[in-house]
Length: 342
Ligand code: ADP
Ligand code: MG
Image 1 (tube, protein in one colour):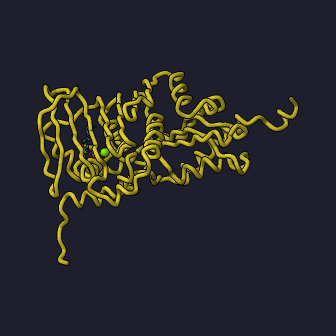
Image 2 (cartoon, helix red, strand yellow; image 1 turned 45 degrees about the vertical axis):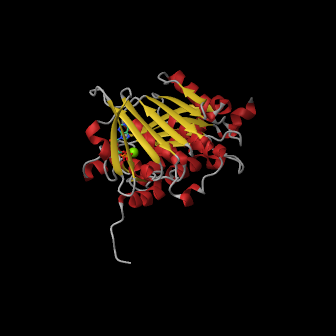
Image 3 (cartoon, helix red, strand yellow; image 1 turned 90 degrees about the vertical axis):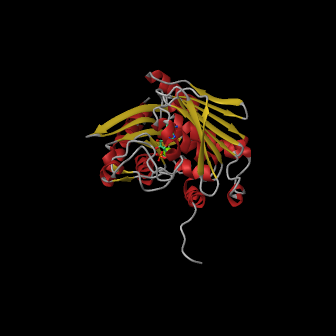
């Protein structure tokens, strides 16, 4: 075969292979866009585990009509402009690929209005060349993105979808994680028309605690202690459960780096090391932890779905987390001689 440039839809479908694993991945990309747009209210409606419909509606900045075509194009982003920006990312997105990828494997419509516009516009892209069609629509300030029939044109992918219940389970878990990343945002999640989660914005310490209790369960809330520690401009805060109270029921292990949810190896290693001697083999640590540091000190451009980061000063961050948590845990764990004396 001769060498040829792939048509846009096919190129986007290939890119979609990396970031759009299942309906929950679509929800993640759309909600991250809403958060980047400054939304503080996000509604998520799902039908049939997301295989029929995923709709994310926000009250963020919206997209101007002239930029709708770009929003749906690959390698088009408003979040970075040059290498300096890439090295100090403070938005959740920056790759400019999500909408193009998702719209190449579904029937996607984007409806948006900025505060300055008097009317809303709706855009969708279809076909090999992903021609964008734009028409007037009705919408308050903000953006709604509707994704219908995910993977309808990529049967091999569609086959990998699990039952609606399983796929929705992944979405619900993701929404939990996201809701723990932004207490100032109010969230709504429905499945097949039924309300599943409704979380009001949590502003005070008490309201935050309540959100943690709602999302991580009563047992977690009862045993978790608030911790906070800082070293230079690196800060860690959140809730951890004393080793004695960790149990199989307490399956809460959430960590965030600069507000981004993570499954980071270094962080997990540090957390385990802090707990190490105090946990029985069958026990799991339970925590909700937030690490905050200068964005120039972390590289988020490591994984297309951004589950991992690279810390420039890995050793220092690791040791800081270990020592902050070891300290906090030692204060939580009753001293053996003391408890024996009681
Ligand atoms: P990225 O998030 O990496 O920039 P996306 O493909 O996810 O790439 O989105 C492309 C662009 O469309 C964004 O940079 C942003 O300008 C715009 N956009 C997408 N979703 C929204 C939204 N909900 N509100 C406002 N703008 C949005
Ligand atoms: Mg994005």
